[in-house]
Length: 176
Image 1 (cartoon, rainbow, N blue to C red):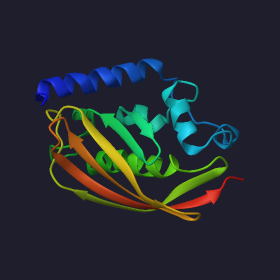
Image 2 (cartoon, one colour; image 1 turned 90 degrees about the vertical axis):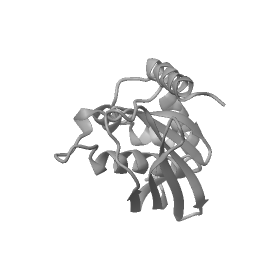
Image 3 (cartoon, rainbow, N blue to C red; image 1 turned 45 degrees about the vertical axis):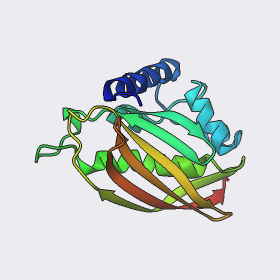
Image 4 (tube, one colour; image 1 turned 180 degrees about the horizontal axis):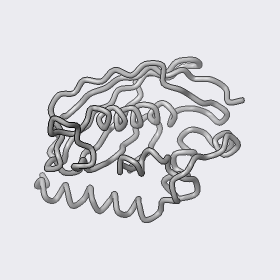
């Protein structure tokens, strides 16, 4: 079993390799979204063909892995994410989880379909700090149908310790 240091080095190397391929942050057009299935769209972001969303730059996290039904985002919480009481703001947790949850649903959608979050439920289990190191939000689909998608996600550190858990219900719809 790898040590904490080995896992952290592996995670940071994977993040650096992904970031080296990314385009500048931006927003894809509706036409670009409609050209691909959900997983193809996410893969095009990973390949640098389409821009990652600006929120990822703002909060300094990135998509690391994408496969149908499973998505991984990674970020390293820092002082810039702190709230006034001395730990990482709950919005950081929620944004990482919302990204992993929504993209997990998106990864299963066929070409021409979109989604939006209808409900987001988050349980913060323990505090994140600037000493936590990199964390991953791992999203997994529970069920996606023609109109509704449901997913769950966890934020974990390099030792597998859980910091938060979330679920979502998404509305699935044809793109205009």
